Image 1: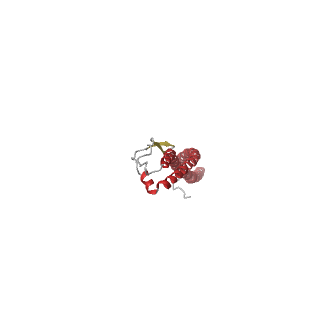
Image 2: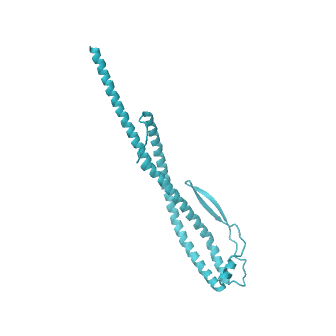
Image 3: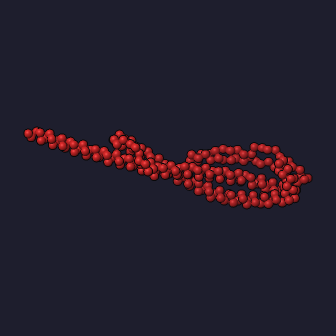
Length: 210
């Protein structure tokens, strides 16, 4: 750990002590923030895992129905049916500040009813498949929102942890070492001055006795 380069005088000592106080306050604030971020992160992890398990089960069921529809209609007819319909804006994105982390929030508009494809060339099971997928879509988007929040929180936790470690293991020890070093040099200088003054006093007293 490299030492700080400072001038060994009282003014510098005062500056270093003030700087250390600021570093200690900053360390405490960052440590508190890190603890709160970890609580938020762990709470979201549990909820996200439960939601992911539910969404995966629903998607698996919807894909099973789609497989039946593809088998009855054929891949080309199914692709044509899925490409039909009119595009629409269905998702609104906002942000919420959670401990300096901008967490996205997705609001899903009401999904339109499936349609726009020929009922003659497509099997009835396709309607069931599309209904199943439309039912799971809002929860899939909610899962994306939750997992993006977890990703952003994890990145902020890592940044905050690095700052805490830098203060705790680098800057504060460097300041402590510099403060001790200046203190020792000032004490040594005071002892030298005191010794010099005592010698001067002895010389003056010796001259006065003559």
